[in-house]
Length: 481
Image (cartoon, rainbow, N blue to C red; front, side, top):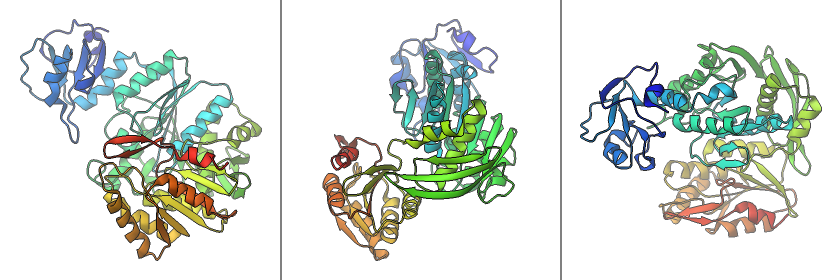
């Protein structure tokens, strides 16, 4: 595409060169630049792209976009804009020919429940024969392709690139997890969602390089409902009023405690058989009795969001919905395996909030004991004690082992975890080898116990001292099926 076409109707200042260039792509990482690319220099939290302009030109960039004065002697086009980060989604959408206009888009934001809700929506739409793409915590799904991106919501450039690939693959619907960071820093600027969902809010992502305050976190989340046509909002949430305060979309509410919610959830029931299911009723805008193959009170809320979003676009009967959700599973999220010795649950929980949530959920099914196998990832000193403290208080036995220690010392990690367990008087043993720890837990469990493996979810590696070693706890569990 011609550079002049990309910048049509965009405010900019041409510092040097010409707009009569054929552009082959856009990049923000100088290492990924290919001949004929635009390099957008963005100042991030840690790295300033303006310091890598020479490297980008060396790799073949023919146009450089900046938002501060720079000295460049090479023969390239230099364009000055007010804010490089703000212009990135605009030129990316232009370059990929506005793929968002050719997709029906569902955005999901909230502290918890985004991933499960997204997968449920995908499953429901696909059960009706629709082609669905997805962007979220577990990566990008385009037909049979799966890309790991590393962020819940990728940078705007890559969102546009993925959407273009979806359109080319004949995909009709896009389900996207929309993080507070993405909303705060403009990664989804220019995208108008046909349907947007708010699951819940709790204090998370507050601190350096994230959100300075809880109020900033709330405000960032609320932005989604200023760029959507319809918003489905949890009316039970304490921050409901702040989320809808400046919303410009049509609002539909759901909840259990809120009697005036548009969609009322009630009769939530934990059902234990070969799996751990959740049954619930819906009345109001949606009526019926539903069941989802996921444990916990929150699963009824996530499923309600998925059902409401799907019914906004397609006609599904109560039976259609229940059939689709009967064998539902999110990779690495509360996956239940009915082994010969008892139930084993694999979950990605890796902090105090998520561990508390999953253990409280499992207790609804009245196990005799919960045996939790876990460690702590490297670079997370702040989580070690709190994970130990939480497991010490809520689990009947903690088996302390290795997660992804990265460059941290495993023994130091485990000592900090044990201090937390001991502070609550919890029982524990240490088995450093994670495979041996899992086998010990399963081989010593009783029929009505639950073994809970947390921290790694569906990962198939362990990261130790800069190396990734093949490791799948799912494979170990399957030995006992």
